[in-house]
Image 1 (cartoon, rainbow, N blue to C red):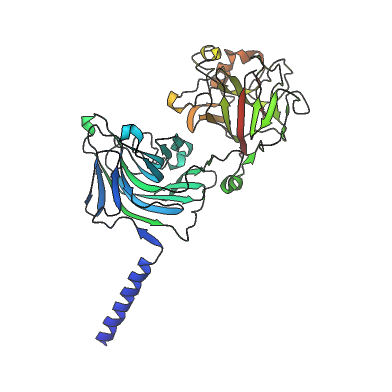
Image 2 (image 1 turned 45 degrees about the horizontal axis):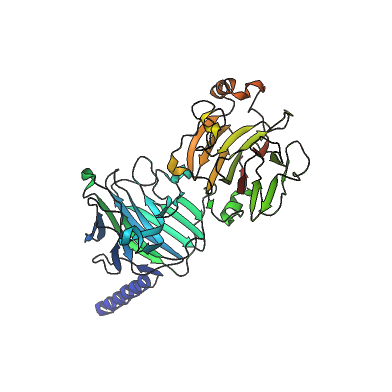
Length: 456
C-alpha cells in the first residue's frame, strides 16, 4: 500500500511538473546565470544574486542594457522588479533594436520601453521610445495607475504586445495603452540608466526576477473603460476606443460633420482635405479672412477631445470649444481656445500676460506650463487634448502632459475673464454646450485624428 501511494505521488508530481513546463510560458531567466542575455551600449554591471538579476550603476556610462539574444514579435511578458531608491530610474525594452554605428561606434539601443520611475513623477508603466521618439505615453495620461508601483518591494510587471496594440500593467493595474505600427518585433532588455558623473548615485541597484514570456495562444487582458488610448494610426479608432465611446470628428477623407462658422456648408476655399489631413491654407496671417473658421455640426457639453496638429514655421491657429456662434462677430468666432502656435517665431507668444498666449494655453487667460522637451517643433505632430468634466473642471494636455486646469464658471475664472480681451462678451465661457472650432488665422496648419468622447 505504501509503495502504491509513493508511486501515485511520484506520478502526480511528475504530471504537475510536466503541466508547469507545458503551460505555454518560456522562462527567460534560469535564476542562476545570465545565459541567453548579453550586455550592450554601456558599462553598468549585471549579476545574479539570490535568484534575481541585479543591475548596478557606474559613473560616466551611457544607458546600459542586458539584452535577450532572441527577438520576439507578439507576446505577453511578465516579471517582478524592485527599485530601492526614488532617485533611481530604469526600464524594460521590448520590440527593441541595436544600432552598432551610433554614438561614434559605441552603439545605441532604441525602441519601446516600459518605464520604471519611482520618483515623485510616478510614471512607472508609461511607454517611452528609447533613443528615437521620446515619450509615447507619459503616465500623466492615466492618473489612476500612478500609485500602483511600490518602492523597495517587488512589483509585478506585465507587457502585452499583440499586433499594433502595446499595453502595460503595474501590479495588475492597467497603465499605458498605445496603438503603434513602427516595430513589429525586436529584443527584450533590462536597463540600468545612466547617472552621468553623479557620485551619489553610484552602486544603485535594480532587481529583476521571475522573467517569463508567452508567444503562443496569447490573449489581451480586460481593458479598463475610460483608460486613454494613444492611437498613432491617423484617423482611426481602436476597438478599445470604440468601446469607450470615442467617435471620429474627421474621417480623413471628407468634410462630413463640419461647416463654416456662420455658414451652413463647408467653406469652398481656404481649407484642404488631402492625404488624411484637414489643413487650413495660408493667406497672409489674417484672422478668418480666407476660408474662415470651421465648426462641428454637433455641439458638446462634457467631453474628452483629442487631436493632432502640425504647424508650419511662425504659424498661428487654435482649437476652440463652447463656441455658440451667438456673438455674430467679425473675425474668428468666440469660444474658449486651446492655443495652437509656434511659440518661437509668432509674435503672439510674447503678447498677453505672462505667456498666456503660448501653445496649449487657454488663450489670453491661463498659461500652459510646459517644457521645451515636450513640444514638437514645426513640421512635427503634437497631440492636444481637452477634457471638460461634467462638473465643469477643465484640463489641457500637450503630448500627454497636463499643462493647465481650471474650473469653468468659478470666481477665479471670472476674475481672469475680467482682465482679458473677452471681458466685452457677457457670460463668456459659461455656455452649457457649444461647437468645436478649428481656426483659420491665415497660416498653414494641419489637423488629423480629431476624436471626441462625451462624458456623463
